[in-house]
Length: 457
Image 1 (spheres, rainbow, N blue to C red):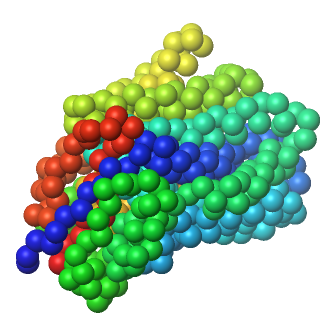
Image 2: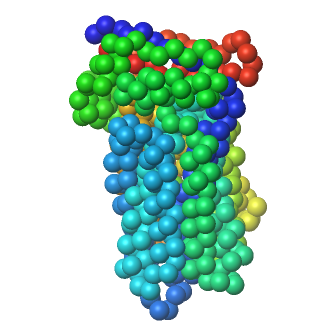
Image 3: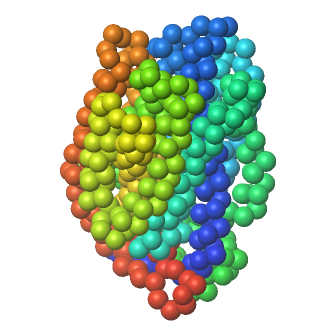
């Protein structure tokens, strides 16, 4: 297969910043909706009108995750086929509007239905935001920029914990959930600011639109790809977008990416959903239990930036393996009767070793595969990993409903962290495509070489 001409463009930092900001807003809104159920779970457990068992509560935590499984699978793929900007906005509209329905729901069945539908949008946001962030970032800053963008996820969970602390005593769990609908007002702002993917336009042969967008973004050295490459991209069957990740070159990587992300999301969603309840069972009051969720999420937001910078400098695989193990250690140490301060420190390690590490892993996936299938590869990996996300709340619910001591939560989740580290260690070193050149930023300090738009015949 002949190598096509390669085009890499210097993207002004302002344009990179706009993309990061728009994706950050979408991820912030999603983080709130993901974290809100864990924040109100103790209140739902005490809600006499529904009289939910621990296993039923775990099931409620899984409804949105089932939707996210489907959303990541289809919306991630659609973003590479019909446009990343459109699918980001559609996803955000779905999950924000359904939060209003969940807040109103008169029965747990309707509550679960709204969470299920909202999950379709939540599942679609991450792969699309990942693809856009990686596309518009310089290669040597991709992990950091992804961590910066994805910090919105952890901060959204922090916002959910804070809303539970201050709004729950006044308005009840319905008011806390209803806040998740407020970000719908951000949709016009994101529509106006966020550019479409140049990779997407190039892959569809829409070179005139790509050139006009590049001029709008002040990409002065933009050069459209050669016509043969564009023609090939247009005539290539749609299913090749999916089969690339299962080709001989990428199959082993796909398997271990999926296993490691599966384990990572077991940790993220299992601990997000059950940490307040577990700590309450350990003897802490509800306020202190929510503080654990707050520290867990805040530490992961800061940790995502630090791990992203470290991954850019020392390599993604090394950082991922080390911090999954450290996260598992932090989880396991919660078994012991420590002081509040010491336990908060261990919870912070757990947050970094689960959420922060998994977000770096998601960015690794988006950066690992060819540019034209970024959204698809990330979406399918996240879709499979949603099975882990669904399992996390169910595992916590099973332990809570059994006669096992609360320490079993920590032992099981720590073991899953070690399994995630092992799977990451098995991912082979990425092999550069013959049509991809190494890009470095030089020249104008206000520009970054993002390397977007590289296509192959």
